[in-house]
Length: 225
Ligand SMILES: Cc1cc2nc3c(=O)[nH]c(=O)nc-3n(C[C@H](O)[C@H](O)[C@H](O)COP(=O)(O)O)c2cc1C
Image 1 (tube, rainbow, N blue to C red):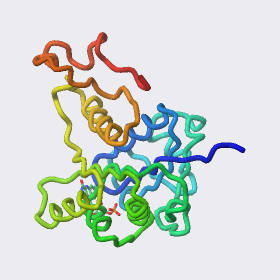
Image 2 (image 1 turned 90 degrees about the vertical axis):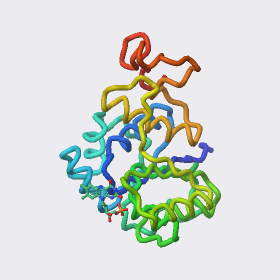
Image 3 (image 1 turned 120 degrees about the vertical axis):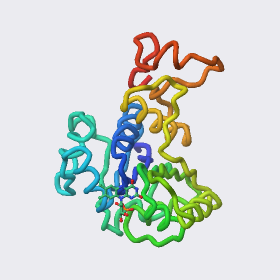
């Protein structure tokens, strides 16, 4: 009997920051992790705005390959579920899954998940993840934050979710947009223990970021390392 497939669910909601999602999905696949993908309706607008790609349910594999800059064969262990499909596998706690990463997360998704609204499959799957006590990470992208959103984030934290703002650190020596995006994506994967080589970790030596930038040949992490 083949072992049960146990994916990470990646929920892409309609916040700016679709490169964070692309980096997380690429790194999960590089780590050999199966991925179940849910793209909210609003995320179609941000993907279109930030990449020029119209993400279509019926052609998701082609569109995802274009978005990630990979070929379709590399997506053999990705499943896609339509955001309106409440009968989808991840909407039940009995569907095997390791946990869920919402990248990027809107304030609306944070609110809906904090309150258990389940307005679409992304929010329903996040609620399922919480009730099953599986890891849930929300990579929030918004600034500044209202008191209402801050209260929702506290509620999420109290329910066991990891609230991880899309907030790149500069101590890893990154200077290009890609390096800063990969830093955030790497912190998302750190939160759930998936190995990656997306950024250079703090070594305990002050000044390393300035003396050996992350992009220099001797320090740049290679994908999948
Ligand atoms: C181009 C664009 C950028 C947006 N950026 C953000 C953002 O950074 N953060 C956010 O919370 N909402 C942002 N929004 C608004 C959300 O898309 C909107 O609140 C939507 O209802 C969220 O739905 P979802 O959580 O189901 O994806 C943006 C919308 C558009 C069209």
